Image 1 (spheres, rainbow, N blue to C red):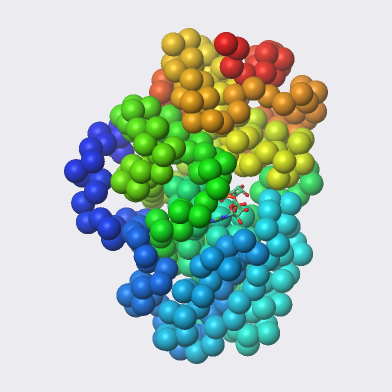
Image 2: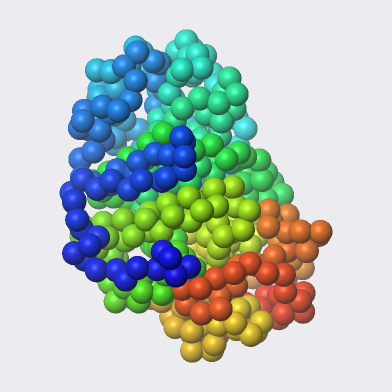
Length: 379
Ligand code: NAD
Ligand code: GLY
């Protein structure tokens, strides 16, 4: 990943703040990520959007009362008609009935192929809305308006959309890129601390997988982020989006490189499915899954013991779980077979050669079972 592993300095990352623009440069489907404060209620944010189409804002029962009005009032000045659908909150609702409610709202608003969807919420709303946009009339435009840290650093960028199946996370989905991403830092003010911490899991993930200097920066600035220092959070969002945009540019459909963004996810998705979607937050499952992946990397002969311990210590200091819940190893191993990276019936894992350098490989089942038996960090 040397081509994207530029050192992180506050001066370079804050250039252009409070309104920052990062390009996801994928040919004619490229788009901007806007990062700043007060963007959702600023009509200037919407200037690049069409003036005469139908818009439907998708949100949920928690986020809509907080932010939907400022979005719909800006859209009313631009779009022909503006509909709204408010979904139930929670990972357990990332399923077909919610997608059908979005279709119903589109049809009720008279949406044709030129309609636009607006995903206002965390990763659940973003994944659902993107999936509905990919399917409705074989594909319509949508805008990501992420309101959680997790969604601002990861899920709103890159065009992965999906719903869950009882047998596994995100098994039904499509690649469908948004036309614009609007990350308004103001929305993080109402985010519960547990959700902020869950978002930090994805920040740590991208540093560990792709950029050693960023990993060092996260270690040094974790307390600032936990304390909601806006400048530190802005830097983390900007760097995470810059790294992800470059990975997506190089491998949009996950033919290879992009899979490193799944560090910890083979274990994490199995934890989510085994505990019942929503019991653990996605970021919490990823946090624990990354500690297991670091342990697996060590046993496999990649990451050294010092690196694995440093990694587990950071995840723990962030306030994320570092030990497996009491679940039968055989159940987790079975669920991992449904992971999308599995090939020929064998799960594959994102492994670390070193902090900041990841690769995907199959490993001996014996090593995986040893990791599951020991269950994570041991101190
Ligand atoms: P989430 O969408 O469930 O949001 C977390 C909680 O915070 C919810 O209760 C939500 O209503 C609430 N919330 C959102 N914004 C708020 C705000 N500003 N103030 C107060 N409350 C707010 O969870 P998440 O962590 O954002 O996303 C997790 C989902 O993202 C998972 O389904 C995961 O699979 C998916 N994901 C997708 C990708 C991708 O590339 N598409 C990447 C990572 C994760
Ligand atoms: N969150 C993993 C990816 O977008 O590829």
